[in-house]
Length: 323
Image (tube, rainbow, N blue to C red):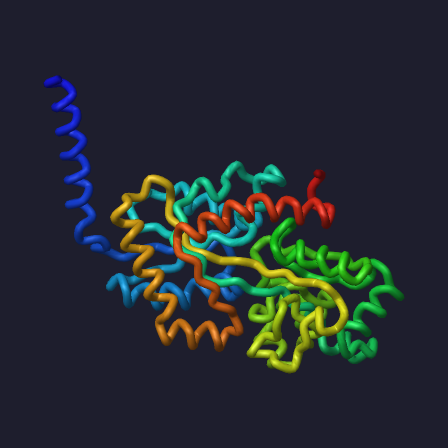
C-alpha cells in the first residue's frame, strides 16, 4: 500500500511540475516549419496565420522553410521536433500521400492537430501567349486542343504525387484528355514561374498561387475546380459551370509533435481559434484569394483520419499507386 501511495504521489508531483513548467508558456519565440518553398500558397497562408498567432501568443513566430523530398523533409521535421511547444508546423494534403507511396512512414498519427486553416481549390491556368497563339479562350477550347494534340500539352503541378500533381489526373479523367504533368519538388511557386515564362504550357495549382502572374497578364485562368467561383477571380467560371465535373482542393492546417504537453496544446488551440478571426488575417487571406476553412483540433483530427483513406483511393484512380 505504501509503495502504491508513493507511486501515486510521484505521479501527482510530475503532473504538478509539468503544469508549473508550462504555466507561462510561451516564454520565447516559436518556430513554424513550412515543408514547402517560399512564395507558394502554403507559405503565404502560413505567414499570414503566424502574424495573427503572434498577437494571441505575444511572441515572435519565425517561419522556417524546410523543403525537399516532395515535402517529406519538412513534414518529418515537424513530427521529430522537441515536443515543447516551441516548434509548430503546417501540414498539408501531401501528408496522406506519403505512406501509400513508400515515401515516409509518417502519417497523421505522428502529430497532434491544432486546427485546419484553409482549403484551396485547383485551377487550370495556361501561358497567355500560348493561349492566344492557339486560340484557347476557355476550358472547352483548351480541352479541344488537348484532344487534337494528345500528350503534347505540359502542365506543372508541385512534386510527384502531390496535391497539384493529382489535380492534373483529375482534369484528365474529367475531360478525357491526355496531358503531360511536369513536377516541381519545392512546390507550386517554381511551376507557376515556369508557366509564366513559357517553359511549360500551364499549371494545375491553386488560383491563389497563380494570381500574381494572372494579374500581370502572363497567365490566363480558364477554370476553377470548386463548387463556386473564387471571389478574387469572379469572371473565371468553375469547371462545373463549363460542363466538367471536377471538384478538387488541397488543405492546410497546424500541428505539433506527439508528446507535446496538454496545457501547451490547449494554449495553442485557443490561440489558433482566435487568430482565425483576426481581421488582418481575414483581409490577408481575401487578398491572397485563399479560403479560410477552420476546423478545431479534434475535428481536424477526424478530417485527417478520413483523408488517410480518401487520398490513397484518389491516387489509385489517377494511376499513381496500385490498388
